[in-house]
Image (cartoon, rainbow, N blue to C red; front, top):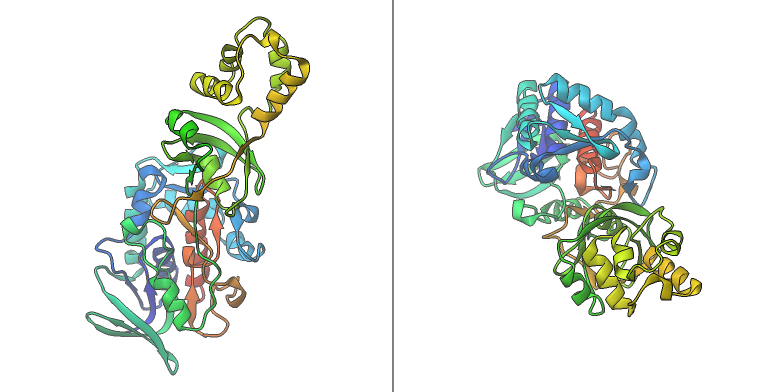
Length: 386
């Protein structure tokens, strides 16, 4: 088989790239080893597909080069996505924090992405075993179980290692290496933390308790925190995982923006755990008192002790034993080094005609629609050039 462009990976970035390429009159073949296109899209946002974020900006992404994402994001904004998706019949709804979800669930977005690529003229082949890829002269050759496919350009859109249950592998990284591209360190991102021995029982007793927090230390993030049987999870924790390194301690503010000292000063003869329960989940208030060895009424606390308690709950130390692995991670931190990739076209500087897009690159967004939007933006950037 001969074509103009081969795209490896039928996810959000690959299908977006296929649409842009085919619209330019290019012959496009999309190859994917899975039995269905857009599998990760179908699972995103808890099945609701948090597809973009209207408050999006370059600062919402982690990359060794913080300027790398600017070009693609500027040329495909959240409004560009909404015009495209809404115009194609995908109904959306904006929620808190600029998060945009699909009203009819992730399945509507997955169907739209496939339909757009096919309507533009791209051919999507799923269930294709990808064996290897190489460059022969000016052409690329992709070996599959059905035989070799040749093209003038090759796009790697194979995603990261996260969510192996949905078919994720390290094949994209191995291909990138085979073409001489560099990789940055790969780590699980947007993932829960496991508690160390000092807080394991504390977290286990609080499993199911959720509350809004702010987390500082190696990061400055805010959102909900959820206690689990093994540690902590939730949006704030997921964002913190993008910045955390083993051994670092997080400072959790259980009452961000609230003057606990002043509130306690007015609590009078209330039992301390009951006074805290006015502002914290009841189980958490009781567990914190037990952990800190506090009992009796608020009135029994000295001003110094009261201020110390407020300080402790404003910067509660949590040193994770580790982040959960790739099986629980929503994204992969790190990837193909952007130092060797054009920020405008996503083409590899050392291999003309080779493009790398989506999660395979060393670009990771915060939780909230940022990663799906990067898939679309990087897909269109490459698709308008390949």
